[in-house]
Amino acid sequence: MVDKLLCGLIGAGIQRSLTPAMQEAEAAAQGLRLHYQLIDLDADASTRGRGIEPLPGLIAAARTMGFAGLNITYPCKQAVIPLLDTLSDEARAMGAVNTVVFDGGRATGHNTDGSGWRWGFERTLPSADLSRVVLLGGGGAGSAIAHSLCRMGAAALTIVDSDGVRAQALADELGRQYPTTHSRGSSDAAESLQGASGVVHATPTGMDKLPGLPIDAALLQPSMWLSEIVYFPLETALLRAARERGLRTVDGGTMAVGQAVGAFELFTGRQADAARVDAHFRRLVAVRHS
Image (cartoon, rainbow, N blue to C red; front, side, top):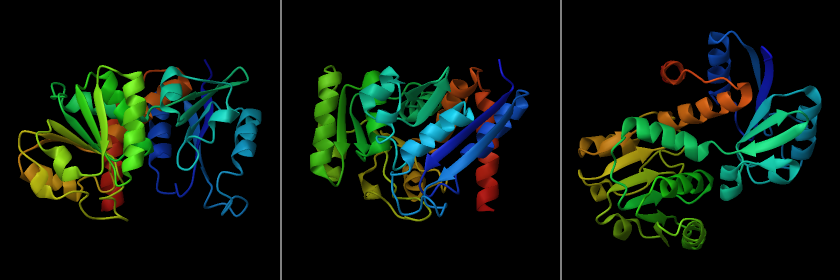
């Protein structure tokens, strides 16, 4: 097994990403030399303003330069698929890729969004009631989590999105793939949350650059659990409101760590020390906000 690896992240506006630090620190702890390169479509003058146009060239260059793998984020998760040789079952089901592994000249697309969320959720709330789950947000991250919830055996899943058509389209696709879960789309959060056993928040609301609450906090009941995916800040207004109202909660850092653990294992073929990655991530967040 090689002990020197080159990896990277392709996306737009990714300068604040903690992924390089997490990947390099875990590699160093295992005696690996891993360099993780940010490839920011917004930061480089040669790619700025061109959207996904540079993506084919970047994937080809990564193959030529001997990259072990790449993480892929907005706006490239769908556009990268035609540039790859094959997809994992999960990436194919979700229609999106967030991790590419290069091996023997072949590029394989994976998706660790859903599995990363599931990893953190099950570690924090292993006995959570999945009888009636509400997912706030039907975008890329929300779609991946929806697939995971269905695979975890959710009995009923409501996807709430301001774009009701998008929410219903995702629900219809879930219904085709997972007929044992009753899936539906909605644009009415108040109606959907009545009687819910748990809530997953998968929209950008609550981030440092988009503060606020995605729903009225009064809709949260102590009988529910709440899972947040935003981790800048680690305690969002929604997470704080849920805790104050007595809900069991999962912070967004668990998904970030779960994604990193999954990608590390795909890149290196080695098992990551999840507790060590989590501790390092939380130190990085604390420093970032100090």
